[in-house]
Image (cartoon, rainbow, N blue to C red):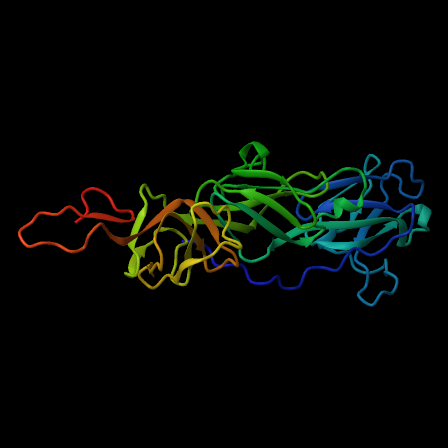
Length: 346
């Protein structure tokens, strides 16, 4: 069964990153992904110097570099080979670098030339669903989503989806993508899932960083089962139609549009109805027409999908052609006309 939509993120999405002065070196990292940055040639950060990341106080006052080291941003770090290696576990913007070395007078001071942003995906906007066979847009929520667009270096966020059973260090290798990769624009990326009944998990790359798997960000696919022949209904006679597929549920809405329609939006609706507990909908047509196409709206979605392969012929009799006055015991041929009239009808 399809997963229920995700609740709104809590806490709310983070504020935009704070402004910083020209010349500041931005260090971009992804939560839970090991990273490093170079301090080679910086005289006050020689090998053996200590460093730590501390977040900006909520009140806006200056960071206190004598404060306790935070494991969330890698703990106490040591300069080795002109680099600082760290792993942050908590997302956030504008984290300050503090250092301790002989050049600092053996005291903790702030290095205002470096600033850290730690990125992470918290989820996707509800519904966490996609209709198989149709273009689906995922809106990502988190820290640093498409921050790359502000860098001006051509880098971009990229996302794709993998099987939850994928394991190992190459679990987020693009070669293992079930759908994607797709470039994120703003906070959105578009995908087309071929199969209903899937549950997939997100792999996401921030600003050219290595892909990280966000296993708590999952998406399920829904869709109607394939039908091999057209439905049929007689004009003016209610007809119950049973629908099957992944994610099909009471409260879904169905209606029909003409054979020439290319979209459910703006087209004249015919025989609109809701699915009941038995996953059936009673349809009743007012006029005959063949090749009516199905518009199906899963209850979690605001708009319907046009299932052009699911068609319905609304059958109607327009009446016999010729004389309707018959003579007793005299054989008379009558021609029956209408929509869907064919040999073998009775």
